[in-house]
Image (cartoon, rainbow, N blue to C red):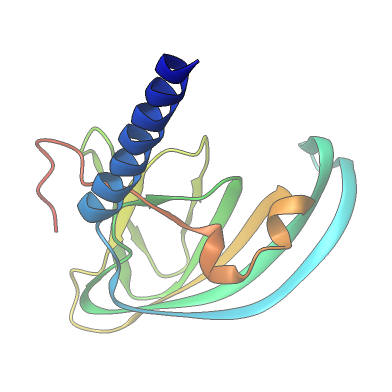
Length: 162
């Protein structure tokens, strides 16, 4: 019994250290201002129109925010638990995935963040980039404050873009 307790305590210590190290390796945002606009619950989605289908296997909702990235600013490496539709209202951003592949998105264009994959968005321009994000996520997650819907990630090896 004493051996099991020691093993459980050791395992708890190791898991705790992993969380601390993971947080220490995170790449927080810089030059970013997020303004939450609204949240709404939608229930179970099963919608179709003009050849586009949206379906969820559980109750879902949306969270909409305005994101401003100053010149040189970035979101930091992160992922969002759900699907995020991003509209770039003005400016230009570079979106990097975990393979360090870069996609340039300009005002009037958009991109999708999905599969809970880590990515970073940078403003390499000389004017503010303004983005509007619409997160579609399970309703239970949308009960969290806006700032807790984002999960910071470490920078992938070999992708020194920050």
